[in-house]
Image 1 (cartoon, rainbow, N blue to C red):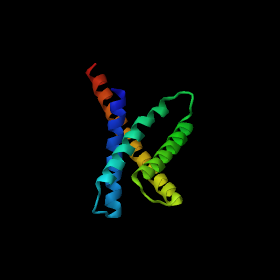
Image 2 (tube, helix red, strand yellow):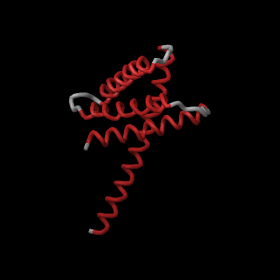
Image 3 (cartoon, helix red, strand yellow):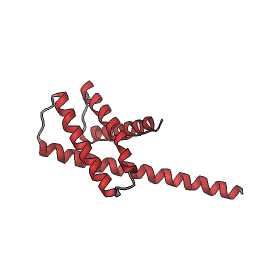
Image 4 (cartoon, rainbow, N blue to C red):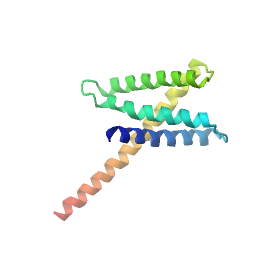
Length: 127
């Protein structure tokens, strides 16, 4: 069940980031390949977040390993989908999107933590 949760979290964040970037760049046309690409990538990103639970790794080490894994997976997906790309451009875009995704996840955790704290205060008041 934990794997499905990771996949669905990845899909949710990946979809949000993808839609935000489409809006930002004013892209009106999305192909089936684009959707499959984002779907597969989002699932991969979600599943590979398990690396952050390895206690022997620092957060920074986990972040770098995760980023490099995502970058390599994007190269593989581009080769599978037959996309032609400039590696420097791809690394720059991936870095920008990774940072944007990290900000989205941080904001999500902030609001989740805030909601948990509110719920805990309400439970303490009842006691």
